Image (cartoon, rainbow over all chains, first blue to last red; front, side, top):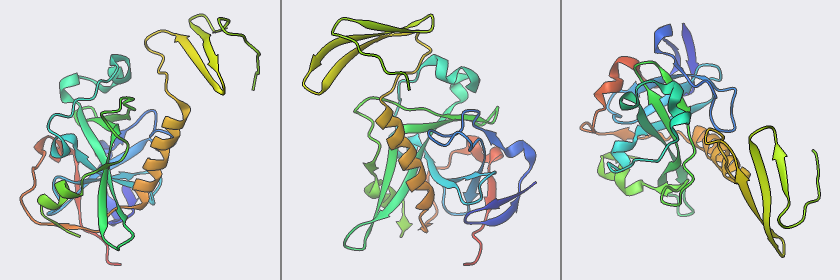
Length: 150
Length: 89
């Protein structure tokens, strides 16, 4: 099927690549179908593009890239539908903001990761309500050291 | 919205399994105790609102960065991902 994407234009996507978030995203329950798009040279970042809303896309990265120790406590109940626990990948939403001096900062939301099981193509955004994992962590240095040229 | 008046130590029962107790009241703060089954997720409303706000902000702020080669590649995802190039602006 053809999916209209925010930054890549229309792209052809095999149906079997669509990842289902049965609960939608937090606060956005109607956004349930996504595709993961990888851009040449931008590994390990992915674009999580909504199939239903062309204008909605998130930039996500495996938690491993931001913090190898990242292991949020998640209720078994919440991931009951996500298949084998060992197959679930925590992905972190990242975004940039322009600062007052015109430079860019990159942030990560460690409080609400997207847990994705690529094998069964299902995902869920969970909320980790502990202080150790902030909603907005400055990861500018991490991204820069990986070799971005903003 | 149903509005009920309760005193310290009094409780409200919701359905068969959820009980909410007013533990203490101090100024404009109310301490609430909740008994619920473990599969009922309990979160402060403003936290969910904040997560939603970040979801929206992040979706509007896809960065236009170019990375050099050599990131850590999560191969497990490769069979699932679509490769694409940006459209010309």
